[in-house]
Length: 292
Image (cartoon, rainbow, N blue to C red):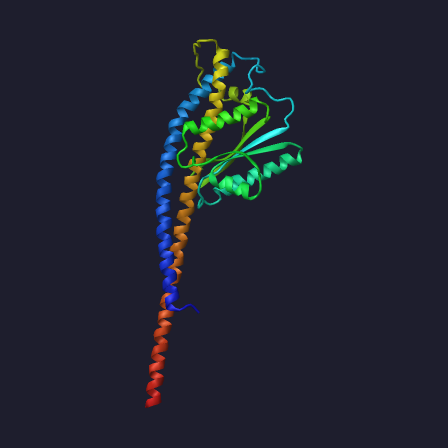
């Protein structure tokens, strides 16, 4: 049976833990608000970019001339880019991405395809290397505040690998932010760019007419890399917001569990104190009777 000293030590330990989880919850909430603001700021630019791409696509019926739109003859090598965070204590945020990447790697290898793994975030890099997966390229230190330059670096590497035909398809695995308590795991193909998807997004939108200089085909070819950069940047922002939301929820749950544990320990402390007092009274009474 735990002594009064043991219970008091546990109460102090849980109380200190609750302070830490409360502080981490507040920090995550602040970072989440900032990440949501950045996503909202990017959205109008991304929509206008897609709208212009859709308009340009109408002038470019021949897709084989664009390397980023061209399907490779044999899809023998697939690149999987897993986006995780640089820190833990975020519930299943990192584990879900890593688990999906490993599952897809096995499925593709079983189908006879070669797989090249890439990872963003220290957690994904460390876990995949610990499981003895070979990583072609890694990026870290981006999860707290991803910048557009980071997306450009990642997109440039992916484009070079695809255009050089070292990979035939590029898939992105990340968490899409829906709410602080809900993140949706995404597995999307970003290369080759599917022309029909670009055109489909124009539905239910107001038609826009642009005047292009130089010709539309030249501009379209120049915007295709920017389209990939935007896709990667949006994924980075979504992953960052999802990480902070998951961490805020996890720390809130931890704080609530600490509150419940403190209640149970306080009750146990009071019972132990009452039992000790009762025992002392019994000893005093027994001693008095012995002398009496």
